[in-house]
Image (cartoon, rainbow, N blue to C red; front, side, top):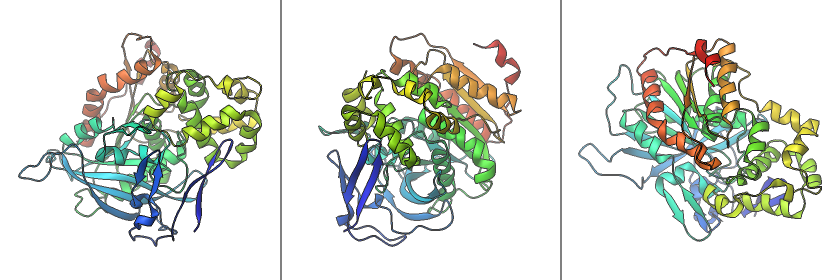
Length: 441
């Protein structure tokens, strides 16, 4: 039997011994199921041996039972869900299978034109396949002794469905799909997965969205980075996606700054996910990682590769990368001293291209986990290029917790974010406030 392997900084880990490969479009068998930290990953998530040529093409679908659903005369509320696998292209130009979910809403669309679509990019879920947002719709909370995961994006998804817009959620490359490691915060992988999800949604049986449907992108934190990158790349990568507007909340636009900020924080585990993802995206970085990581660092990255965000909070909250390296330097110090690493992270920078459609950037002024300053700089970079930017500074007091400073604006700003994006889906114009940006902290 072939062995699927995942490349992780500090070593190569076997993901699973799988049975015979499936053909494109066919259902996987029970023998293809894998287990991640006590959670059985459905065979659906095992990609076939070959993929379609066109990006956004559906590979397979199946009904998805929403855990939070109510019956009604017009069908289940808030809608009818379908699990997806579709083809995308990764940052190295290679085909990749991506999973996700499409929800056809029960609510009617009251705007003009066909029902619009929101492509939602989830925030940080983790790196284990069991953390995928599509699984979070079916299992919003997992507490099995080995995995702690919460489908916190379900709230935004349900609020968007209530507007009458359809929603498609991407799991990203390698999260859910069992053939590779999730390339956490990879700019191109995230953007492509999100845009191709919008394409795939149009082909779902029973979907009322069409190529004419206006499309909105929505994301916070990791999702804010993916939606921002997708807004930049849409004109060249997916001009057929009728993009009307993008919400990008707390985007990690500058990974050099974000890497420094998360080190030693409650979410220090995200540093391990980042390093694992960097090596998955660029195998040439593996010898550098091997040279600088000590045994504890390699073990931590291997452990984190199967964890969800809840697991990482409990297992690695407050961890400092100085305990992971051979010479006691922090990962940020090693990056600063290593030109190839600096070049790689500079290539991940969001803000170098001009979005063709309106964008709304919102970030908490007290956010020191995904630092406010670098998120705001994304907005100013776009303004300098002449983009239509609405920037909102979410003013909340410093809670004393980096995690809470980052998470609180997700909730307090979500209503405004949904309203702004709904206006774009209705064809209403967006008014840039770039002219006032220099006056804002």
